[in-house]
Amino acid sequence: MRRFVGFEKGINLGGWLSQTELTREHMDTFITEEDFRKIKAMGLDHVRLPIDYELVEDEAGCKLNEGYTYIERAIDWAYANGLNLVLDLHKTCGYVFDDDEYSAGFFGSETLQDRFINLWRNLAKRFGSYHEHVAFELLNEVVDASSAEQWNEVAERCIRAIRELAPDTWLLIGGTRNNAVTTLKDLRAPFDDKIVFNFHCYEPLIFTHQAAQWIAGMPADYRIDYPKGIAEYIDEVYRLINPDFAQPIEHLREMPAGKDFFRELFREAVEIAAKFDVPLYCGEYGVIDTADADATLRWFEDIHAIFEEYGISRAAWSYKEMNFGITGSHYEPIQPNLIEYL
Image (cartoon, rainbow, N blue to C red; front, top):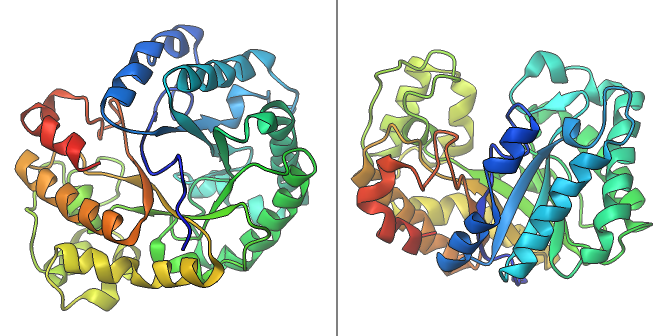
């Protein structure tokens, strides 16, 4: 398995150009170059930059040049501070990970798929020349597992289009079930030698998302410790929230949480990456700020150990706010150690 050199330890800039109201005031102040300096001082080598399509095109699909200047600014700040950048399309017209109704028609609409591909043509034309420092992530978190083959088709069309304009840029692609590590096996063989297989990891989800207000059925006062037996976490998922959230770890039910759990959870993905000689990247992982800080640190220590053991590149979610921001006051008691385990 190849290493994703230059993109081995990073952090997400969630909430800056994605999942927020894209006002000029917000975009000018939420993240500044000083934040890039701080990220570099943490010992990290890259940032993952989520963007929503509304940043760079209007509802008719026409380009918004001002939005491109914010991406350009982020690339310039990253480069000036010795950081690389993953450009992540977090939302495209007709598809976003956290709105099933909005996204329901994407895989049945050639019009929406063509618009997605055309957006990537525009991004590749503008940023493909930065291939030594900038990688492209096709789409954040395809959700429905039944869309796996349709996603393969759309992704391959998109890659072909990007390659006409950015032949040397690393391209990241993930599976379904919100980029679950267990769905990488459903991806087609890599299109060329500049493909990265990408997953996200918030397991056990009932721990990392305890009290998350956006998860249906999750009590606002719910708390659970780490580590516990995986069976207990799974049973709590079945009791409180969508049972689908337990699927990626159901096969590890009899294990205790800890390093061995993450080792087994990632093992198949590592074998797939080795088979195809592609780098493996965890584009999101983290623990919500309602969890106990010491338990959070134990979780980070365990997952970090297995990232290092397997040579998996990664970017923690997230740098600031977004309920997971490691620069928030909740994390202050553990922050020096937490940064060590990114």
